[in-house]
Amino acid sequence: MNSLERRFVVGLAATLLIVFGFLFWGAMAAVKSLSEANVLARLEHDAEALLAALWVNPNGQVKLREGRITPIYQQPLSGHYFLLTFDNRPPLRSRSLWDETLQVPPLAAGAASTFQAAGPQGQFLQYRSAGYEKGGLRFTLTVAEDLTPMLAHIHRFQVFALGLLALALLVIVSLQRYVLRRGFRALDRVRDEVSGVASGERQRLQALGPVEIAPLTTEINRLLTQLQLRLQRSRQALGNLAHALKGPLSLMTRDVDGLDLPATDRQRLAGRMERIRTLIERELKRARFAGEGGGQRFAPQRDIPELVDALTQIHRDRHLDISLATLPEGTLPFDHEDMLELLGNLLDNACKWANGRVHLQLSVQADKLHITVADDGPGVPEADRDELLHRGARLDEQESGHGLGLAIVNDLVGDHGGSLDLQRSAGLGGLEVRVVLPLPAHGV
Image 1 (cartoon, rainbow, N blue to C red):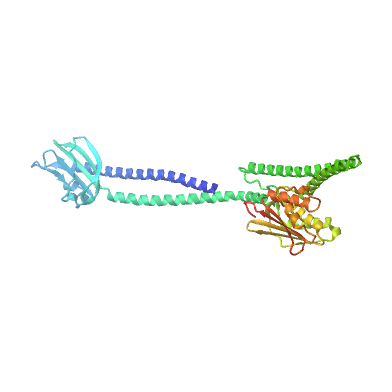
Image 2 (cartoon, one colour; image 1 turned 120 degrees about the vertical axis):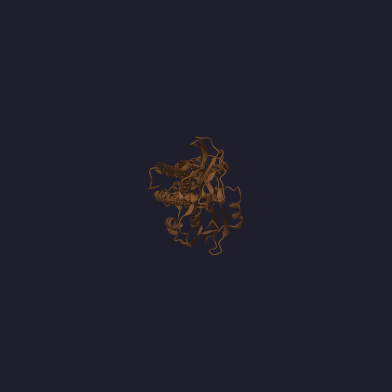
C-alpha cells in the first residue's frame, strides 16, 4: 500500500540520516583536527623549552639542563619523547625512550615537518621535527607524543555522538509521525463519508476536509450530484416516453380495428402492436420500481419491507400473505434501484399468480447473494420453464403473465453476471424463482 505517511516518514528519516551523517563527519573531523592542533602546539612549546635547555659544557659536550626538562620525559615509555640528532655528534634522547629509538630523517636548519607514525610498545605517535642551528651546532630536534589516549577519548565521543544523533533521529521521526497522524485525522471524517457514499448511506460529502483537499472533495460532490441527476433524468425520461407512447398506441389499435382488412392482416398488425404494448408496460414497470433515488446501495432490512407494503397495497383486493425470511443486515453492494426493480418484478409476478401466499428469502453465501421467491399458484410447466430460460429466447415476446416480469429480471440478472433458475416450489407448490448474484469485489 502506497501510504503518504510512510513516504513522508521514510523521506524525513533518509534526509535526516544524510544531514546527521554530514554533521557527524564534520564534527568528528573538527574534533580530531582541534585535538591534533592542541598536541602540536604542546609539542612546539616543549621543543622551545628543550632548545632553551640545550648548552655545550666547557668540555665541548652537548648537554641539557636538568631543571629545564619536563619530568614526563624522564619516565620510561611515558608516551612523551624527544630526540636530538647532530651531524657529527652522538644523539641525545629522552629517558622515556628507554631502549627504544625514533626513526626520524635529519632536517636542514629552518625546516620543519609533522607526521604520525608507530612508536615504542605499539604506541601511535604524533611527531614534530625541525632543523635548528645554535652556537655553531646543526641538529634536528624531534618531539613526539602518544595519541592513543586522545584517540580513545575521541572514540568515546564518537560513540556518544552517534547515540545522541540516533536518539535525536528517533525523536524527530516519532514527532513527525505523530504530527502527520494528527494532521491526517482531519481526513478521517472525509474517508468515512466516502465509505458512506460507496455503501449508499450518503448521497454526498458533508466534510470537505483541509484546504489542501477541499477542491478534490468539492469536485467529488459535484460529480455525485451530476451522476444522480443524470440517472434520475434517464429513468424519468424512460418512464415518460413509455407513458407518451401508450396514448398513440391505443389510438392506432382502435384505428386498425376500424380498417377493412383481411383477418390475417388484422391479426398480424394486432400482434405487432401488442408486442409494442408489452415493451411499453415493461419499461413502465422498470420506471415504477426504480423510484427517484440515485446511487444508493441496497439495504434489505430497510428497502424490502417498503417494497412489500407497496405490493400489498397494489394487490390489496386479493388479501395476499407475503412472508419474509430473515433479511441480511447492513447494505449490499448493489444499486438500490436495480435491486428494487428485480425484487419488485419477482414479487409482483408471484402476487399475480399466487392463490394467497408468497414467500421471499435472501441470504449471502460464499460471496453470492441468493434470492428465492415462491408462490402457491399454478406454477409453470417444466417445458415452458425450459423455453423461458433458453439462451436467446425473447422473454419480452411471451404472453402476459410470468413472461414480462421474468424478462426484466433476466435482463438485470444478466447485467450483474448472475443466474436465474425456475422450479416448482416444494413448500408452496407454485413457481419458485431462484436468483444468484455474485457480490462485487469490494464486498458487503
